[in-house]
Image 1: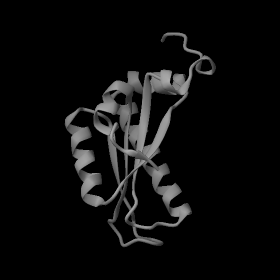
Image 2: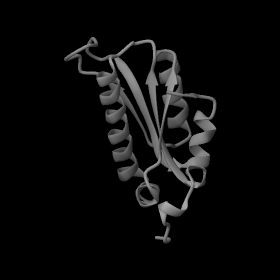
Image 3: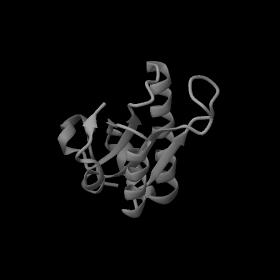
Length: 130
């Protein structure tokens, strides 16, 4: 693996990243939102580890860049998931178990990547930061 020192890179120079996408229409508490983003991060990273191990290792070594963005509703989240899957990116769509604030099966968040930044940006560049 190439010798990359993350301390020498600016955030714009990272070659790999993970996008974490959250629905804003659910009006989750801050704690619930944080947990759903964590589910998306861990689960999509695990998908990358299994199916794109080179990208996963490079992302880990580089500093694990993550970006949190938002979508307005479930339809937008599912459409983004399908687009990312068609592009061959590691993804994970989070469905809540319904133990606290939401009904069981509520689709809450999406993890995309880690993958090469240029590939992720083709899918997510229009999304606004959370």
